[in-house]
Amino acid sequence: MRIAVIGGGALGSACALFLRRFDTRVAVDVIEPDPGLRLASSARSAASIRQQFSTEVNVELSRFGLELLRNASEWLAVDGDAVDLGFVESGYLFIATGEAGAQALRDAHAVQRAAGAAVGLLSPSDLAQRVPWLRSDDVVLASLGERGEGWFDGYAFARALARKARALGALWHASAVVGFERRAERLHAVHLADGSRVEADAFVLAAGAWSRAVGALAGVDVPVFARRRTVFVFNGPEPLPRTPLVVDPAGVWFRSEGSGFIGGWSPGANEADPDDLPLDQPDLDQFDDRVWPALAHRVGAFAALRRTHAWDGYYEVHPLDHNALVGPHPRCPNLLLACGFSGHGLQHAAGVGRGIAEWLLHGRYASLDLTALSPARAAQGRPLVERAVI
Ligand SMILES: Cc1cc2nc3c(=O)[nH]c(=O)nc-3n(C[C@H](O)[C@H](O)[C@H](O)COP(=O)(O)OP(=O)(O)OC[C@H]3O[C@@H](n4cnc5c(N)ncnc54)[C@H](O)[C@@H]3O)c2cc1C
Image (cartoon, rainbow, N blue to C red):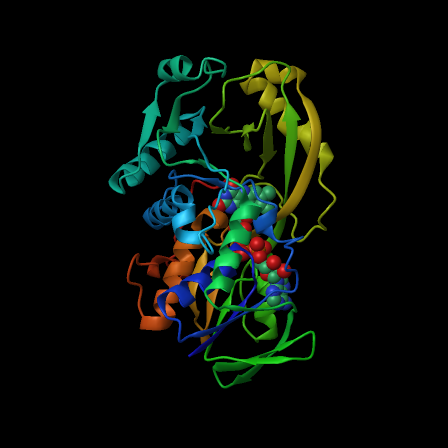
């Protein structure tokens, strides 16, 4: 069997790694035009992991992501080298300031607890006691991850996955897919920008924010849209204890990063979210207009913070339900999608890579059932809405 993986970010690399780990007879070609991952979301991420999702499959995917991060050397070492992904275990803190938000936290909490996640709901007085430097007088309810959440080095993670996949025998092509050979419903080969051609029995589309464009080359619609997100780096005037990753109802998040902080803003459901803005032009006005006011409201000391720099990257958004598309495309059964993660793909790369490999090798999911993420769900009218989107 021969599999071509399109995209060599965290997702494509994880698919290649598990394919070769499970069966060394499978030939795996990874096609990646930007081996240094200059524009890839995997290298521009806030690289955090949480158990606090509103859908069970996402909690379960994070559980496996956590296993890999906690035991990185076991999973990713090559020639016995220790692998350090800089994993810091620290919870996410979701805040609700209205009854609707509080109910959403309670609903998600029930899903998380049923899936075994260590998450606690905090009243305003609990919150004031646990996180005294945070404004809590307008809070109705908060949800704090007690274990199994935190952040890591996303670039190192993506590189370690790729390095391990190569060590297991996956072959990298430093070129872009520019066309497909398709007969009836099935794909047979890809054409690359360097003039070469790669034949395969099945193709995995893991091209992140570029997945829709690559899908169009194969003649199929992949409803994944590139949305620019900016991450701001700042210092506070006085040291705080290491913060959780705080998600404020104003759409703003922040967390500790080294001795300073990072944070950003995500548009809500009713706000325009322009597609495909150019990268390397972080939206600095957003900091003054959106981020800083919300930070200063939530943490008094942040009124006097200093922004030092910023970077941007693409979320690859699946707007129907803000959940990933994983599995065969309904109009092209040997094109497997692994894209559309809507801001939570890095932490789910390992679980989805494992699932895609199982599906390709055995025709079914063995470790964790990912059928809820099937791309067929839109046509079948059963979206899987993720409410805890950042
Ligand atoms: C600012 C920001 C913050 C984020 N925070 C988090 C977070 O805290 N936690 C989390 O889990 N996730 C987070 N994410 C999301 C996460 O980074 C992505 O979901 C994940 O990295 C997607 O990985 P990928 O491999 O699918 O895509 P990418 O890493 O983008 O890789 C896709 C690859 O496809 C390649 N490609 C493009 N066109 C072609 C072609 N024609 N042929 C072949 N290859 C092609 C590209 O070169 C690219 O390297 C964040 C993202 C951003 C931008």
